Length: 209
Image (cartoon, rainbow, N blue to C red):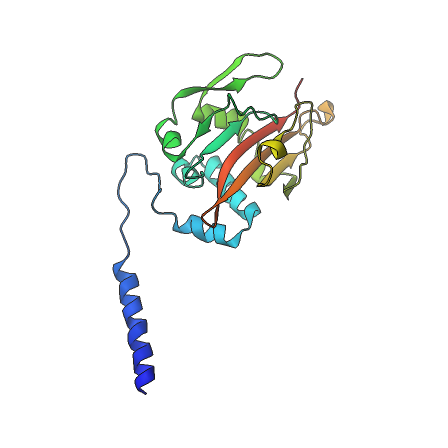
């Protein structure tokens, strides 16, 4: 009986500690939940990267930028590539705070294929043109660690991210008249950090000249 009472006492003490340890969220100007990643940790612990990717796209589609920012790798940030070829010298890398504080600022994201013009857009504009430009949540094919879409642009994902997991969302095309030349794909690349997976790369791909 004494042993049972001790167990009950320990359990009650643990419950009390848990209850007292809860912290109310603060009202930050930009609402980036850097210190409150409970939901992200739960998702990462499942290690279901396809489901995690869908949650990220849901945040992007709904323009819930604070939620999206919480998925960014806390140390390395996330690199954005408008086409399959990843330029490690010129492309934009944003960390959680950069993303939150520069959401409406114009940046040079790279150059348009074929034209050579600068891709000078705000973050919101870039997402509409080179991230969620079609409804990738309802893509025809979704695969993990397997490349689907392929065009003229050199795909160096596995060279830049040699031991990383990625999830691809692919559409084979939209207008039958184009015979598949209007295909679109989006790849989300992840890296493990402190036993959790975070977003380290967003690669958009399509037919290029």
